[in-house]
Length: 282
Ligand code: C2E
Ligand code: CA
Ligand code: CA
Image (cartoon, rainbow, N blue to C red; front, side, top):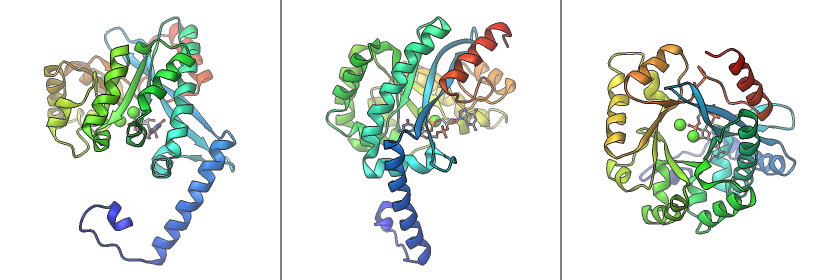
């Protein structure tokens, strides 16, 4: 099974290591489920900034898991398991609701209608009821559709491009926007980009880091040209320093998130951060 997951024509040798890995995966899935049921999951919100006026425009919701023994387990280790087990479908609905309820409170606290970006897995999009689920949660939380941005990666295309187009058509008609995350790091072809129903390209952190070097600027610049050519808005992630912020602006990108502005924060910290920033801008 592992060999199949790795792709065609792969061989895997069964070792004790692999057995240990399978056991620890099973254990992780067990604690994932019980952790979810006992409320160990919460969201952190990372501000998104308009680089022209440094104004807060929104936030990306990022899932956090504090396990029973207090350790924080990174999403990169548990999301794939939540996806494989299908738990991500339940969790995805729950976290969308959480994020949109928080959006109301954060908008009230900051005095502007914030946009909330929520990450969505291919497993979720593949469900025929995905768009109706989103519409239901928008209604339940009384959220204007335009205040929700859904972040997908190129991997959603594996759900079948036709299915993806159908799912997002209804949502975008309502005003929900779609951002393509991690663009350029996957394997899909540029022809997907043309067909994917998206509004915004998110420049991956790896390309933003490359802006520090002359050579590294080329990919980020090209992504921006490509995105603009296709009528897409652009946001940069992983802006960690004032120098990178300046580079990002120089190459024509006007929205960003990253440690330079703020790390992902729980709701209370987010509001504190905002208030500190009002008093002491820059
Ligand atoms: P992502 O969607 O690309 O999220 C951005 C990641 O970059 C986050 O890591 C964030 O904390 C980190 N980051 C933000 N600014 C900076 C920076 O300036 N420098 C550096 N080095 N890192 C920065 P995180 O929270 O560990 O999330 C990792 C990945 O887990 C996400 O990547 C996303 O693919 C997945 N994930 C997180 N939450 C969810 C969720 O609710 N649903 C789904 N399906 N996936 C999620
Ligand atoms: Ca994301
Ligand atoms: Ca990303």
